[in-house]
Image (cartoon, rainbow, N blue to C red; front, side):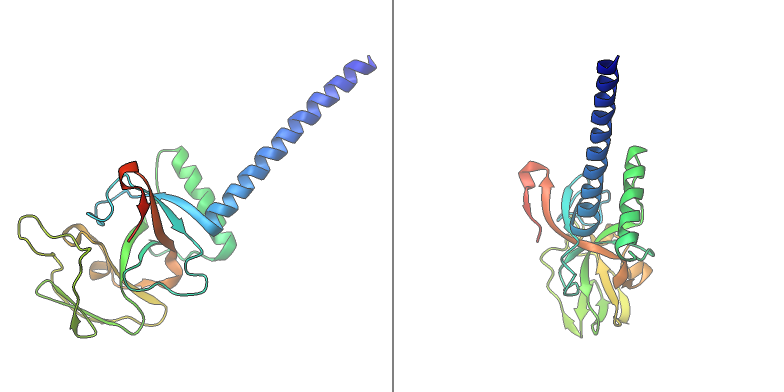
Length: 207
């Protein structure tokens, strides 16, 4: 009888240990994903040909701990949703997991390239981008196959204030970005896209 009780106690203890291990693993993964690095997926066409739908990327959440985004950086941000510190990031991660289990994704999470930083004047004239009145050569921007130009359109001058960024997709003809919804707030930024892990034939650092 005593031996039977000890056996039950041993099984119960083993189950409890497994539960603790699973919870600890989830907590560690959550902290890594919310505070250090995260895997994210491209769900739209606005960054073609640099990034295409289905690409899986590693995002660094440490990239802007001691500095702000620079022109040319590819960033991931939550439009109209401040990140909100540790607990905010943890809440976003848990919400993302719940959405993924339902086969959904956060639709305000956007991937764009930083075009203007605080102090910059951004203007577009006849499909040519100007930063601080100087025309910009954009090797990364997609050239429209029919018209043979980058479809920047036209836009009156916008001055980027402190705590703001002006962002655009590389596929200018198919991108909703700061030309449409205005500058974004710095505290919406989750991190910087630094590495592509899938597909394997494009495995490597993101420029």
